[in-house]
Image (cartoon, rainbow, N blue to C red; front, side, top):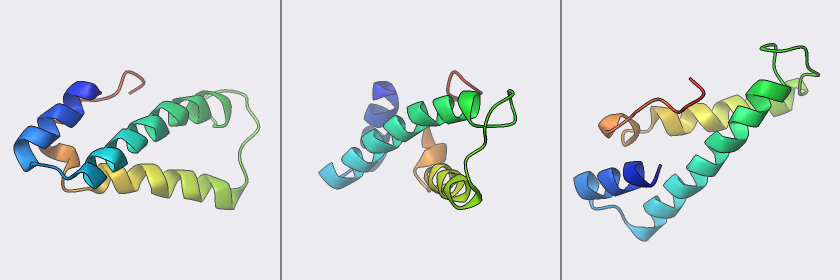
Length: 79
């Protein structure tokens, strides 16, 4: 994912704040993999409650909908 941040920075001259948000989003995506494997219908698991599930979904999709996201997007390993 470091390559992703560097490519975004080259294409957009990101501020330190944007770089930090992107780095934090990468951490969110890594944790999302755990949720997908252990708290979803993908496997026989206990599901998170509806408000938490909605929060997780909204948080992940907000990053993916960003205008910066499509610049050099490659699918994470878990897709």
